[in-house]
Image (cartoon, rainbow, N blue to C red):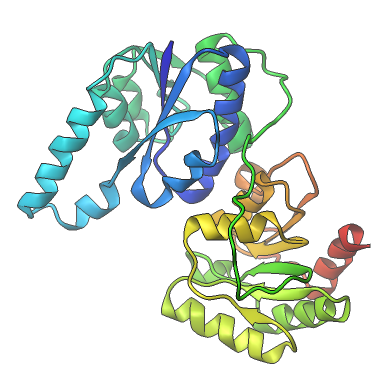
Length: 317
């Protein structure tokens, strides 16, 4: 049996789909499981040892360069790659028109959400079989329940993301205990005040835990350097690949972060994780995992530094 999963983006959504691989492997030990995903997030399914082939797609990049001949060559190459093999089933757990179009082009029987529960109802037209999954459940549960409905799996299997942190050398990090501080997110209203990060960071250093501030773009880098300079012993991490970030998160004493995909990766790796919410409700897409995972705050109700430290103390003590 050969199966294809389609979950292309974003980072948090891709992480939330990892348990589907574990569920399928449990039910079909001899199956070959492939995954189609945005090229920027391809390293996430590669962390799961039960994923055979990762098929990168570049919709985000192609949209910006639709008038370029090279873009259309890439699109043709992707479509040819997708159609080189026949699948027994293709499961789209994203429920968007873009993911449905990918699903529809793959050769095999197509499964996905019914129109009334898909994120974009039009997507359901691309599937041979559709399923009504409660929309008010957490994203991880919805993915797993969709797979359970499509392949007649038990719905009460233990949750397993199935990934472990890569063993990579990070010579700039040192050898002591550290906490990863994820201050960056996609929207300004999801940020947490810098003064609160400084309070928490200083409290960590007093416990012998080094705060580490990763960053991506120049704005994030400036913030990380500013916060690290205000906290004795803190580190503003160099620019890291997704694999390096997974290694950093996977070996941390604790991860503290705002609403961003890396928080979900931390929880999936089994690292004690505290997620801070300031502008969104964590009920449906909050950090979710079998270990120490806590979601603090809500829409227009961010947690205080005192509240965050009180929860962190539950794990650090």
